[in-house]
Image (tube, rainbow, N blue to C red):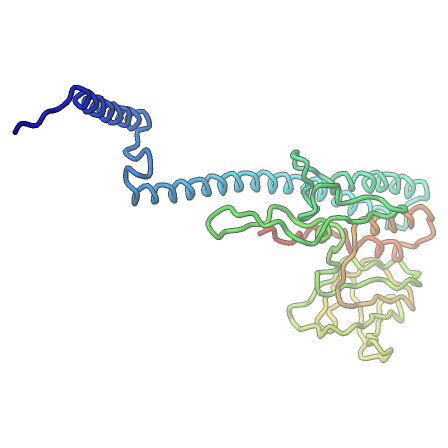
Length: 326
């Protein structure tokens, strides 16, 4: 018995064979065009899955590279901005030294005050520096609006207290900027641990130009005062008003008392005193406002004028011991 194959069946088989060969040819052409052996998951399910995972990893690395470039730009802009502010604060320091001179006339003090006021007026624009993409450098994560504004004559901060953490590598994050509140509003006074100031009633020409902890002894953190009984003799008074020691100040020598080193320039009057206490924080805007106000009234002695600014600007200008950005 012979098997008969109809003409239609032969035609169908031929068409199917042709379509299969055409599909294979198309697949080969796609492989050649893409340079990839796997053009769909069914070609190699195992390796196709690995390829998808690799694509995701490469995309993540590309994003991290982009993040790193953006962070580098922002940190570079931040560095330039802080350098400009530091230059201004250096000028403030020079002007403060000039203004504290007992020989400066009222007209000269007014000139100094005018320049200080110009610096003060320009600081907020630097504090509100933008990165060029609509984000402000010093606003924390709330960086869509200027972080500093003037309200009733005072500069206020409207940014937040959260650093933006940016992923620049697998499980590696960096801060893309410092907080404006850290830079401008919480400036460490003194050396960051101990600070000093002249008493408000001082009448002599002595000024406290620097104060630090002394390496030869540890300061216990308790406040005390150095009270002069003459131009060269002084007594040490603790926080409760008890005299705990006496000494003699020699021209050109620092005073080292209770683990604290004080540099005093000029001649004190009997009854003048300098207070030592724990360092705190102060904002640069109000410090400048106070200094400008003191110059405007022209009623302060050198000893009274200098402390209004020395906690933020002293050579070297300690206010720009900026917190680390990493």
